[in-house]
Length: 195
Ligand SMILES: [Zn+2]
View 1 (cartoon, rainbow, N blue to C red):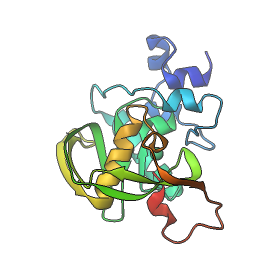
View 2: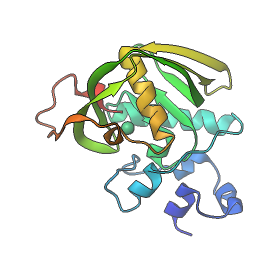
View 3: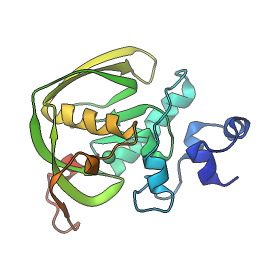
View 4: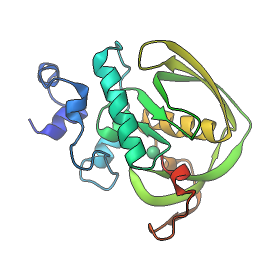
């Protein structure tokens, strides 16, 4: 069985378990799965599974997710972007790090339009309509229940990352002015668009 098969969960359960820790599934070089890779679409289009139990394995995965998100100058990252089809996302828009496990969006209010990009589709940006406010519940990486009310950028990131867990990408959200940017074009504020 290929490593990629293990990552996508298409292999046998027993093999997935014997493979060890979740973090073992993260690629050492270039950890973020890209949409234009041969297997990228397949992985990014799947619906992730609920996390059944929060343990040391999950804590370590979240630590890796934080490190990889920051290294990529991202504001958010979902586990399937690392090839791990578990319902976990992390974000930090500049006011603190958050991990949400088994998130459920309880409510959405209002509307906002803002520029978005995705670490799995590097360089592509577009204006996406999102709810301006969301309430999400779930657990943190230690298993503690969390309930977060987010507005503006926080709400945008939560919706973008939550979509990843259902195999939905920002390009599915009818973005306007969809365009490619080169790294030279990106200004200081570009990290805010990477999720
Ligand atoms: Zn994304």
